[in-house]
Image (spheres, rainbow, N blue to C red):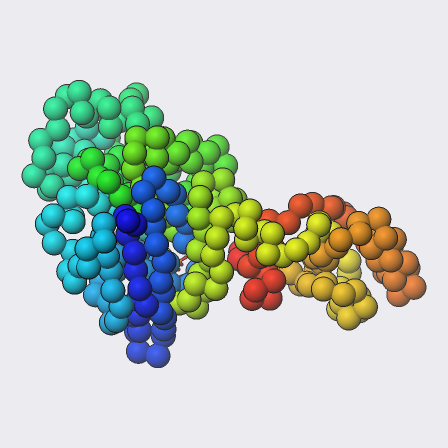
Length: 303
Ligand SMILES: Nc1ncnc2c1ncn2[C@@H]1O[C@H](COP(=O)(O)OP(=O)(O)OP(=O)(O)O)[C@@H](O)[C@H]1O
Ligand SMILES: [Mg+2]
């Protein structure tokens, strides 16, 4: 039995099909990532599932039980981190956690409080005011708040947006720890590295629809491609039609799928030479989720 299942979820805002027939399952102990660009419908989807927004259509099942509205019994099992969280600047980390647990009707024992701050690696900040926290620490506090009620399912909406790579790794470590504690995680992200690092199962979302899904390996295998060449060239359009499968991203970078690296590199250099163009910064790399998105939509996830 799945922890969570949604069937044909829909939410339209006027002519904007924010969520347009989304179906998926989340199994116990999994980390599932909803990966997509800005405006794909990730927040709308996750907030409907959390009971924070009304759906237009569709069905939601928690532990096999169909739920029309998120009742108290379900709410107890959910931990929610919103895309934007607001805290009271002058409260300390400890006071903030007490405030939020109070909202759940829980009074945290000192040992539980300690466990919570340890889990998000904020031990040293326990008595610091919220306004003195760094972006990464703030994000971890938001994570701790999502955990005050010891939920079974944790929803994280863009848990690492705006964080530097080190702070991001920190959060990733914490999210992995949640699963070790028996929790199930549904997160949204527009970082393919995040989905690649964390997710057991990835739902790629664009324009309100799931356009591909599977484990990272499965999604990458679908490309059926050995490697990708990336390089910069002044006038990529001249080369575009002459190189099979080539795509231009950000106006100047070319990405070329290849199954025969050496042959294709040689061909590209010859083509460029004939056109009087210089190839710069050529790299050969393995396929990633960005390539999956590009092959499905013709666009880059991050633009
Ligand atoms: N309350 C609302 N009223 C009108 N339109 C909305 C509302 N909420 C979302 N939308 C629209 O629905 C679409 C999906 O928005 P949503 O916030 O779910 O995307 P997202 O994938 O979370 O994007 P981001 O990565 O920027 O957070 C967007 O076009 C957005 O403008
Ligand atoms: Mg969002």
